[in-house]
Length: 145
Image 1 (cartoon, rainbow, N blue to C red):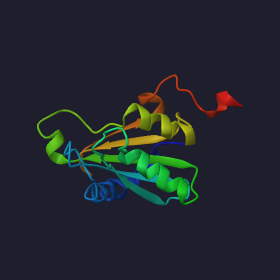
Image 2: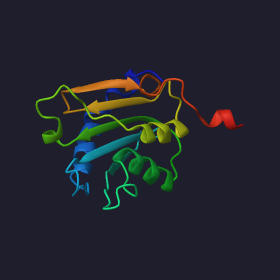
Image 3: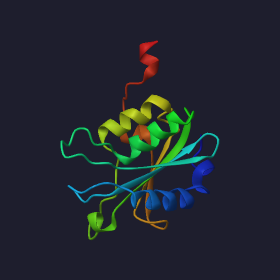
């Protein structure tokens, strides 16, 4: 898939990720994250991060969106947009980026060469990567067949 195929969706994906971020439960880190996952059917499924006092039972926004999409019957995806709280990135060159676990979960369902990841500060300020760029030499389900 060519990145041009998702360019028209990016503004809406970023807006929906920003809205999903408002639902985040992050009382410990105060690092709120929203994600908007674009299915092959051009449906956008959102997710937010959910922290837990025990830390490890928490869940990232990206995985929340993937698990929600899978639970609703979607298994193929084109792209994901990720937005973090402005205060967390203010005054830095950083963009929100999926953790290694989220990258691996995404890898389960997508072709890493084609799947696009939008790391966004705003609709006007974002960076675009393939999953392969963020998770090179990855392990996927095809290695188990």
